Image 1 (cartoon, rainbow, N blue to C red):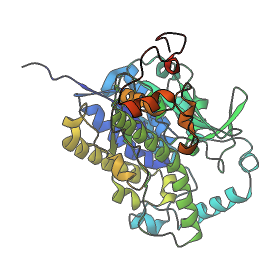
Image 2 (cartoon, helix red, strand yellow):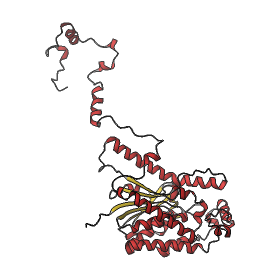
Image 3 (cartoon, rainbow, N blue to C red):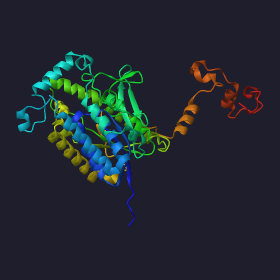
Length: 409
């Protein structure tokens, strides 16, 4: 029996603190699927960390190397968090509550970050996550990886625009810049520019993957809820919801741009080979994500992280069962339903060339100035008067029809 051809996908990985363990679970299941080939990965914040760990592992040991590297990274994150003063209360741990909303240390830390700048609160720039990334990720291997292209997004503090770093310029600084929350860490400087978390400008950036002509199936792994049914009723909930909306805005705008591009291609009958047409897919479980509190993004206890990992694997497993056969064929994420309340480009009723010809035919020519004058001010045409009175067309020798240039006009 012939070996089944592998299907190629690009991945877009959102940030979300420890909720990035959901993405770890999704990646683990996708890597387990030998019928899939990952061509490119774009990540922001925790998504950027998952992306570089994935590339490092792929270069070092293929699929199994990537799965082990992701496990080791998230295990290391959890081990480092054991020494953090920010922990759930004993009661929350007993009840299996992952939220930090009741943690005194978390509440004090949250208050301090809103009153004191990171440069003063943490003048030594202590960041155990940076040390962990340096320890576990070989960036020479990341930049040398040819099995998957990697894109990391950070936000330029001065311009507010997204800066996308790609191989061979990916370093620990670019990854930490992508994950630099401005209330917690000083801006990361790279080549004289200061950068904050990439979620403000691209969470994650999709355009590097759209520009990649080698693959037309783009899978977005979303860990932040677009919709929350319950309205925020406390100051903290309001701030958290504002942050979610802010971090999702860039993704929504890029998805809308992709939808408009696809609609224009369909409406105008454009050649897909000349214009970038994407097949969009989404791995997400909105109801599960909506149950997670924003404060739990700082909870990296192993019980919680491993639970998120299992949920992510479940998402990917279900998605593969329902949508694998559609890869390479069509989109499984209906953007028209998401943006049903926005305008659609109108298709022309006929071909472009015919429309132009019709417009030119209706347009008055420079040699017919009378076409622009009202009927009562039209000049008298002896030839047309003669034709009307005699029923005969004017002769070619009639002086009123001569142009002096034969038929060139």
